[in-house]
Image 1: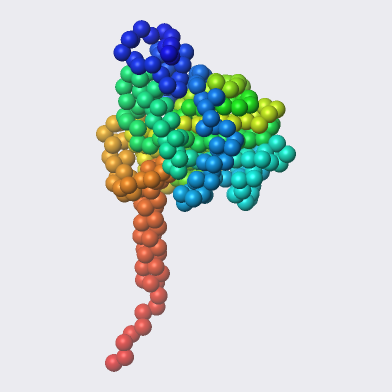
Image 2: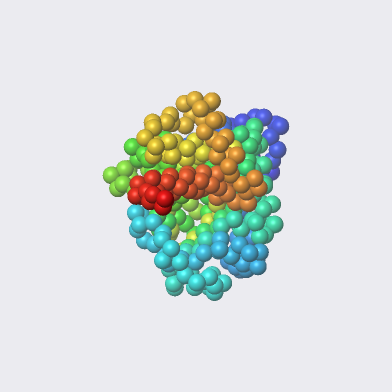
Length: 338
């Protein structure tokens, strides 16, 4: 049975994934501050290399093979992944990890394999049991991604929208996490550009490296990433397998929409309020993009970006029509014949 340190509430059920978790620290830190935890996934057969290869094959057959990616590994913190680093998809990549310096990612693997989806729901249940309430206004989407990497590779510096639990399965790695509230390290401009689709908007600055916290992950140990917390990762001397459970929540999605609308307003020469200064203003900004977004989102990208993409597409069409109208107005007028 799981033990929950630092809390005596007998109503909390035994946890399925987390254990030896300090409830008070979890409640104070979740979604705001990085912290380490223990998990039971390291011995789970779902995360063996042969089983993960089966999951990749199921993703291909389910029509989401684009979420199974094989890349040449990176060794630099400040050089983000680019499309050119991707390799042809092949299940043989799972057998070539050590000799080929490959990085394999299975995104949203739970969409093609129910076993992983059940695990995601168990993590959400554990989290809400520890919090004593629903997650950040209610979960809008949860998915599991797998990172399988050759020794010594680096995951370059970046930010993510969601709250997530990174669980180490095999091998070791150092995870460097930074404060998502530090606007010197993570300026508002970078957050807004990220939410307009610039994946690599967050820029690594070596002078701020001492502000990061290093979490050493070994099998059975994980780290909670708060939303938008900048981070980078260095693998140890063996093949690394990590499971990342990403949780999108209503409060986070609405804050993302506020950042998007602020970026659009800023481009128009206005000076919008930052998120979380006025609940009413935030609600007005977010509601418009929620209304424009897909009514039945099937991915976290749909949740966050479909509304702003439709809005910017519409604005671009209006600008195009206005530009053509101005050009037409300046054409010499031809008098009709008498």
